[in-house]
Length: 227
Image (cartoon, rainbow, N blue to C red):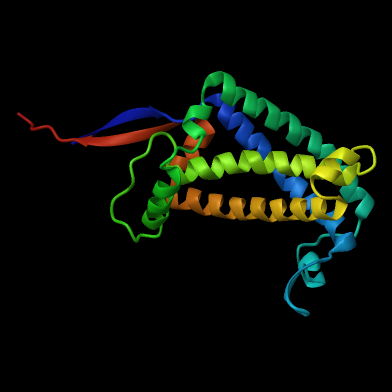
């Protein structure tokens, strides 16, 4: 008995490059955004006049060691914004020119199949739904992240320059609405991070390694009769 190794190409260098650049940049954007938000943490979930949850209690900021430094937060946030913007532009251009977008965009049946993927991940479905490079849930999630990134950039600019970019602020319904949308998109990015990390853990080491080196190694056992 011996093992035969099969190399399966997964992710081209450009996809891996954009992925690993974007992860720390977006993390720093969220971190610096929290520095800004703490100066005016006004959002709540409430029913009538009863506050169910406040984004976020002071204990939350203290537990994460987030200091109260508005100016520093703004400087960092808008500094890394340019890296986020440039990386995003090059990523979208790569998808267009390489035709990779065809593998990423949701199809008509993607929403139905994404539910089957969720059932399989939750161990409520025995058979794994058919997929190409990305399954239906991944197509929807990854396309949504691109749209969210654009929304975060535009609402961020509308908040940053509400006078100079008054037309953009107007499109989002004013400064207050633009800030709410920006905040909601940030929460969605955090949820995406959480689900994404969980999915990577569940998928195993090979899946993670493929995003680092670009390929998976499939080991098959061969049994030969000795003569």
